[in-house]
Image (cartoon, rainbow, N blue to C red; front, side, top):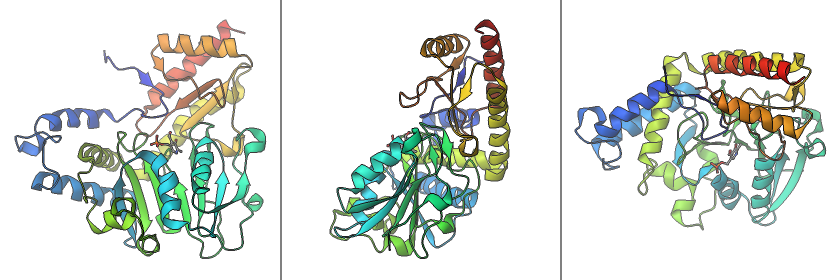
Length: 362
Ligand SMILES: Cc1ncc(COP(=O)(O)O)c(C=O)c1O
């Protein structure tokens, strides 16, 4: 029997088992070099290979066009909340933000330190349980860029396609919690960022995919390590980078390829989420939090009508080997995060447990 249990954590989240096993080997001895991946110089040949493969696989898996750079940055997705306006928003300029939750709100707060924020749309009126309709988005006259959050990890809502932007306006996406869970058209983005610790690997690195000409419009009066172009021009190694975190992303990308790529991930993620949503829709105890047309395939938020029952469910589920189901305080209740690496058997196990719990707690 495996000693591992089902991990519904919102992030850091579950990683593919073959990746963990390969990482164990490579920690000891990377590719027969006699030196572990953590111990190699970041400018040596062994890491050159890790670097080249991670970027090539990232491009291949995401069909990233040559117009875009792949950057490995640090500071988490939260650093992008301020690094983006610091580079691209000047006093007197306006950026449009769409507020669909806690992370988007934080991005807005940081942007206000640098320029003017126009709130193009928000779903705050109903505690962020939905994604605004395209025709509810009202842009400013000529936004410096438009920022949105593709999947709202805390509320369990997800855009089905990118928001429309005015002609020529750069689109910026925080795709931290649904990156590579489905195909993504990078040509629509001026800049896309994603912390790695959900669908891509471990905490410590943030993937940024950005159009080269957009990066060139960034501020030059900043310390070099705060400018995107420094990383773009110096092969993501202007200083000592988080080698192990990038190595792990590389391994996860190889796993995605071996499983059939992002199209296969999307199919699998739909099937996994459907199992749980179908049960929730039929249940007389549990209620889904998000509106039907806005539901996330990555983070499924739900609750019972009463907090004591929620707490009991979370406790009993954990005892049954279903861990990490407590939701963020903003929604209360439960959240099942079922990223790419989360197995469909775990979704079945959750549904079976909910059935049993519902019978016992009617
Ligand atoms: C959508 C989204 N954006 C940003 C963040 C913040 O990421 P980090 O902790 O890497 O700064 C998170 C974290 O869960 C997130 O889900």
